[in-house]
Image (cartoon, rainbow, N blue to C red; front, side):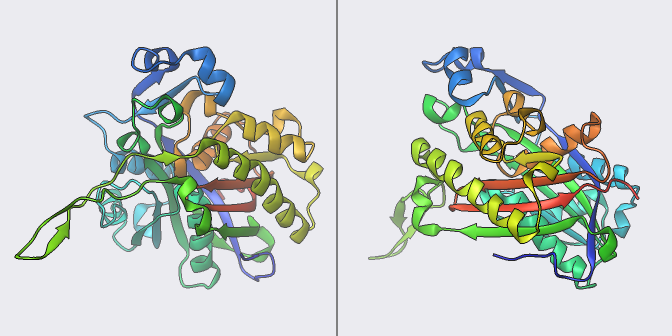
Length: 339
């Protein structure tokens, strides 16, 4: 847990971008595979459709599109980027996809690495990147949240397959003065004792190696989730961590322009908004079209709202990510836009 508001130097959010797969799978289409319906899915989740990466697309490719769009909005040349953090739990390369992304972008001077924190990954990566900028060690950073959960969904399990989709979103961060600071505070938490509520475990498959010895064959099962427990966790912990953040930064809920939460379930978004008496019109949601894209949900929603003019420079946004680990976090940010 940490708070950034007392640190002297600032971080400005000056660009954003996103990318989604071309394949759109509607609830009615899923109903052709499993025993479900559009009405059943909508009433329980708020989801109408999701995007799924197809044969001609990759997660790295989507991440590149999102990052390139963020660079364009910021007005940066790729060679000026010092740091690239790819928040993902589903990389194309288990050793890390960020270096390949760095190469594709042509950001030759940037150090690049993956960060894994599931649905909290984007906020964790945003805070991590900010620390490099605040110290003066680096000046410009790209933070990308991207996941391809369709790889690990059991598409015959109607309880979970209806929830998830693929996508990527990115933000461009720049070191700035304290007066222009756009990351006003944050709180981060983890609780591994509850990790079995939502996980993606290894396959326990052992093969003979040499006489009397064996080795484990690599691989993972499909996503395992206790939906009821995850829901209870979210509606309890998200308001609590946001309340802590608002108190630490002396921010009144009514002063917020937007509430931007991880897009997991519309009922969770509504419950948190109600807890702080925030009008529904100020609770950003694109869950209906994309489902839960894990680390991509927050930057994907941010970019959509910036592009359509809802989020304007200078506006105050409270954001929270939550999910597997279990992990959760919150950040209070002021959108700067291109300087």
